[in-house]
Length: 148
Ligand SMILES: CC(C)(COP(=O)(O)OP(=O)(O)OC[C@H]1O[C@@H](n2cnc3c(N)ncnc32)[C@H](O)[C@@H]1OP(=O)(O)O)[C@@H](O)C(=O)NCCC(=O)NCCS
Image (cartoon, rainbow, N blue to C red; front, top):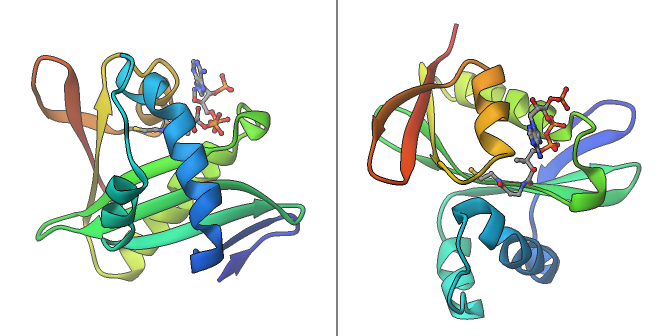
Protein backbone atom coordinates (compact mmCIF):
# COMPACT_ATOMS: atom_id res chain seq x y z
CA UNK A 1 0.00 0.00 0.00
CA UNK A 2 1.32 3.44 -0.89
CA UNK A 3 0.36 6.63 0.90
CA UNK A 4 0.97 10.34 0.70
CA UNK A 5 -0.67 12.62 3.26
CA UNK A 6 -4.17 12.41 1.74
CA UNK A 7 -3.90 9.95 -1.09
CA UNK A 8 -3.89 6.20 -0.56
CA UNK A 9 -3.60 3.39 -3.10
CA UNK A 10 -4.89 0.12 -1.67
CA UNK A 11 -5.93 -3.27 -3.08
CA UNK A 12 -9.60 -3.43 -4.08
CA UNK A 13 -11.66 -5.86 -2.02
CA UNK A 14 -15.01 -7.54 -2.51
CA UNK A 15 -16.81 -4.65 -0.72
CA UNK A 16 -15.56 -2.28 -3.46
CA UNK A 17 -17.41 -4.10 -6.24
CA UNK A 18 -20.57 -1.94 -6.19
CA UNK A 19 -18.49 1.25 -6.15
CA UNK A 20 -16.40 0.10 -9.11
CA UNK A 21 -19.31 -1.25 -11.13
CA UNK A 22 -21.30 1.99 -10.75
CA UNK A 23 -18.26 4.14 -11.56
CA UNK A 24 -17.27 2.20 -14.68
CA UNK A 25 -20.83 1.89 -15.95
CA UNK A 26 -21.50 5.63 -15.57
CA UNK A 27 -18.36 6.62 -17.46
CA UNK A 28 -18.67 4.12 -20.33
CA UNK A 29 -20.30 6.59 -22.80
CA UNK A 30 -17.42 9.06 -22.21
CA UNK A 31 -14.80 6.32 -22.51
CA UNK A 32 -16.01 4.92 -25.82
CA UNK A 33 -17.86 7.97 -27.13
CA UNK A 34 -21.11 6.24 -28.05
CA UNK A 35 -24.13 5.06 -26.07
CA UNK A 36 -23.23 1.63 -24.74
CA UNK A 37 -25.65 -1.25 -24.81
CA UNK A 38 -26.20 -2.90 -21.49
CA UNK A 39 -22.96 -3.66 -19.67
CA UNK A 40 -24.10 -6.20 -17.14
CA UNK A 41 -22.94 -7.05 -13.69
CA UNK A 42 -21.83 -10.36 -15.18
CA UNK A 43 -19.56 -8.60 -17.67
CA UNK A 44 -18.10 -6.68 -14.76
CA UNK A 45 -17.53 -9.79 -12.68
CA UNK A 46 -15.58 -11.36 -15.54
CA UNK A 47 -13.22 -8.38 -15.65
CA UNK A 48 -13.02 -8.49 -11.84
CA UNK A 49 -11.35 -11.88 -12.14
CA UNK A 50 -8.55 -10.49 -14.31
CA UNK A 51 -5.57 -8.45 -13.24
CA UNK A 52 -4.66 -6.32 -10.24
CA UNK A 53 -7.31 -3.97 -8.91
CA UNK A 54 -6.47 -0.87 -6.88
CA UNK A 55 -8.68 1.67 -5.14
CA UNK A 56 -7.61 5.29 -4.76
CA UNK A 57 -8.87 7.07 -1.68
CA UNK A 58 -8.54 10.80 -1.06
CA UNK A 59 -9.02 12.04 2.50
CA UNK A 60 -10.67 8.72 3.32
CA UNK A 61 -13.18 8.81 0.46
CA UNK A 62 -13.01 6.46 -2.53
CA UNK A 63 -11.93 8.68 -5.41
CA UNK A 64 -10.96 6.25 -8.15
CA UNK A 65 -9.98 2.86 -9.41
CA UNK A 66 -7.23 1.24 -11.49
CA UNK A 67 -6.85 -2.22 -12.93
CA UNK A 68 -3.86 -3.60 -14.78
CA UNK A 69 -2.94 -6.88 -16.45
CA UNK A 70 0.43 -8.49 -17.18
CA UNK A 71 1.15 -8.81 -20.89
CA UNK A 72 4.30 -10.56 -22.09
CA UNK A 73 6.18 -7.32 -22.85
CA UNK A 74 4.30 -4.65 -20.90
CA UNK A 75 2.15 -3.97 -17.88
CA UNK A 76 -1.21 -3.05 -19.43
CA UNK A 77 -3.53 -0.52 -17.80
CA UNK A 78 -6.95 -2.04 -18.43
CA UNK A 79 -8.96 0.58 -16.54
CA UNK A 80 -8.48 3.99 -14.93
CA UNK A 81 -11.42 5.77 -13.36
CA UNK A 82 -11.60 8.93 -11.27
CA UNK A 83 -14.90 9.79 -9.56
CA UNK A 84 -16.38 12.86 -11.34
CA UNK A 85 -16.22 15.07 -8.23
CA UNK A 86 -12.46 14.45 -7.97
CA UNK A 87 -11.53 15.04 -11.62
CA UNK A 88 -9.20 17.81 -12.82
CA UNK A 89 -7.35 17.81 -9.50
CA UNK A 90 -4.37 15.76 -10.60
CA UNK A 91 -5.56 12.37 -9.33
CA UNK A 92 -5.55 10.77 -12.78
CA UNK A 93 -1.96 11.91 -13.24
CA UNK A 94 -0.95 10.59 -9.80
CA UNK A 95 -2.70 7.27 -10.53
CA UNK A 96 -0.74 6.88 -13.78
CA UNK A 97 2.52 7.69 -12.01
CA UNK A 98 1.67 5.09 -9.37
CA UNK A 99 0.90 2.52 -12.10
CA UNK A 100 4.24 3.23 -13.80
CA UNK A 101 6.11 2.81 -10.50
CA UNK A 102 4.37 -0.52 -9.97
CA UNK A 103 5.35 -1.61 -13.48
CA UNK A 104 8.98 -0.68 -12.89
CA UNK A 105 8.95 -2.45 -9.50
CA UNK A 106 7.68 -5.60 -11.24
CA UNK A 107 10.53 -5.40 -13.76
CA UNK A 108 8.56 -4.12 -16.78
CA UNK A 109 10.37 -1.75 -19.13
CA UNK A 110 7.15 -0.76 -20.87
CA UNK A 111 3.53 0.12 -20.05
CA UNK A 112 0.53 0.14 -22.38
CA UNK A 113 -3.15 1.10 -22.53
CA UNK A 114 -5.93 1.58 -25.08
CA UNK A 115 -7.74 4.88 -25.53
CA UNK A 116 -10.73 5.65 -27.75
CA UNK A 117 -10.42 8.68 -30.05
CA UNK A 118 -13.68 9.97 -28.58
CA UNK A 119 -12.30 10.07 -25.04
CA UNK A 120 -11.55 13.79 -24.81
CA UNK A 121 -10.35 13.64 -21.21
CA UNK A 122 -8.02 10.63 -21.33
CA UNK A 123 -6.31 11.43 -24.65
CA UNK A 124 -4.75 14.70 -23.42
CA UNK A 125 -3.86 13.10 -20.07
CA UNK A 126 -1.86 10.31 -21.73
CA UNK A 127 -0.21 12.70 -24.18
CA UNK A 128 0.86 14.90 -21.28
CA UNK A 129 2.52 11.92 -19.63
CA UNK A 130 4.41 11.02 -22.84
CA UNK A 131 2.40 7.98 -23.96
CA UNK A 132 2.87 7.38 -27.70
CA UNK A 133 0.58 5.72 -30.21
CA UNK A 134 2.01 2.34 -31.17
CA UNK A 135 -0.93 1.01 -33.21
CA UNK A 136 -4.47 2.04 -34.00
CA UNK A 137 -7.71 0.98 -35.62
CA UNK A 138 -10.60 3.15 -36.82
CA UNK A 139 -11.60 4.36 -33.36
CA UNK A 140 -8.92 3.67 -30.77
CA UNK A 141 -5.18 3.66 -30.18
CA UNK A 142 -2.78 1.40 -28.36
CA UNK A 143 -0.58 3.79 -26.40
CA UNK A 144 2.73 2.73 -24.91
CA UNK A 145 5.50 4.29 -22.88
CA UNK A 146 9.01 3.04 -22.28
CA UNK A 147 9.92 3.45 -18.65
CA UNK A 148 13.16 5.26 -17.84
C1 LIG B 1 -9.55 10.48 -17.83
C2 LIG B 1 -9.57 10.68 -16.30
C3 LIG B 1 -9.00 9.44 -15.62
C4 LIG B 1 -8.68 11.91 -15.97
O1 LIG B 1 -8.57 12.00 -14.55
P1 LIG B 1 -8.29 13.40 -13.83
O2 LIG B 1 -8.02 13.13 -12.40
O3 LIG B 1 -9.38 14.36 -14.15
O4 LIG B 1 -6.95 13.86 -14.58
P2 LIG B 1 -5.92 15.00 -14.11
O5 LIG B 1 -6.59 15.96 -13.18
O6 LIG B 1 -4.69 14.34 -13.64
O7 LIG B 1 -5.67 15.74 -15.51
C5 LIG B 1 -4.36 15.86 -16.07
C6 LIG B 1 -4.46 16.46 -17.45
O8 LIG B 1 -5.24 15.61 -18.32
C7 LIG B 1 -5.99 16.44 -19.24
N1 LIG B 1 -7.42 16.33 -18.96
C8 LIG B 1 -8.03 15.69 -17.92
N2 LIG B 1 -9.36 15.77 -18.04
C9 LIG B 1 -9.61 16.47 -19.17
C10 LIG B 1 -10.80 16.87 -19.83
N3 LIG B 1 -12.03 16.59 -19.33
N4 LIG B 1 -10.68 17.56 -20.98
C11 LIG B 1 -9.47 17.86 -21.52
N5 LIG B 1 -8.29 17.50 -20.92
C12 LIG B 1 -8.36 16.81 -19.78
C13 LIG B 1 -5.55 17.87 -18.97
O9 LIG B 1 -4.40 18.12 -19.78
C14 LIG B 1 -5.18 17.80 -17.49
O10 LIG B 1 -4.30 18.81 -17.09
P3 LIG B 1 -4.94 20.23 -16.56
O11 LIG B 1 -6.05 19.90 -15.59
O12 LIG B 1 -3.75 20.89 -15.93
O13 LIG B 1 -5.46 20.90 -17.80
C15 LIG B 1 -11.02 11.00 -15.80
O14 LIG B 1 -11.56 12.04 -16.58
C16 LIG B 1 -11.95 9.80 -15.85
O15 LIG B 1 -11.99 9.00 -14.92
N6 LIG B 1 -12.71 9.69 -16.96
C17 LIG B 1 -13.67 8.58 -17.13
C18 LIG B 1 -12.98 7.24 -17.30
C19 LIG B 1 -11.94 7.27 -18.40
O16 LIG B 1 -12.09 7.89 -19.44
N7 LIG B 1 -10.84 6.54 -18.15
C20 LIG B 1 -9.76 6.38 -19.10
C21 LIG B 1 -10.03 5.19 -19.96
S1 LIG B 1 -8.80 5.06 -21.25
